[in-house]
Length: 174
Image 1: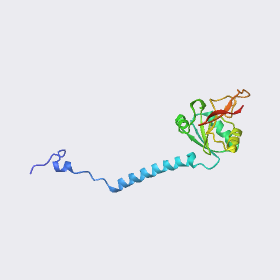
Image 2: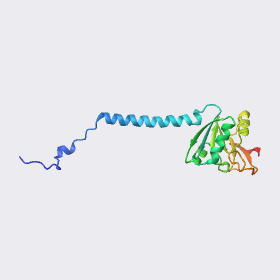
Image 3: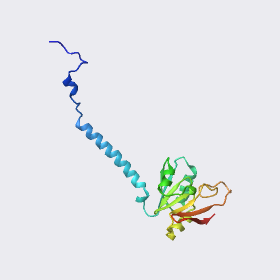
Image 4: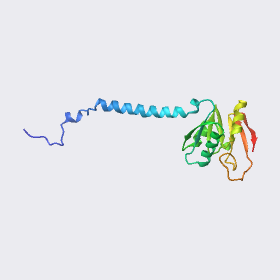
């Protein structure tokens, strides 16, 4: 009887599907659910929709020092702050309706309102107490002397702007 060459398979051997161990498939499925579910849970915990009342949820670049200074300032001013480092702050601004000309280096959400940039804590507290219909407050750009942007004694005047669907107006002058 002639021997088959080890590399040559008969047609019937080629057509047979490989058997995958059921445990391997179940293990993979469990890993996908665990990782995916874990990611969803971590995202849900820092999503402003799930934030506690009065919690400031900040979106910023991990490498931005002035944003970190503003976060520390807001904590020192009594705010509970959750930080979300992101490489695409512009997408956050777009998602929450920050007008292009109001943009700064970080975006925060508190009680359904947007706080854009280096807005002083007292302005945020007063805005929230007034229960304004405006979408939020912005300190456009990165004004020197604003919270987190301190440069010794140098300060430049800047405005905090209230903005929303009805337009924008100066909320405070600094």
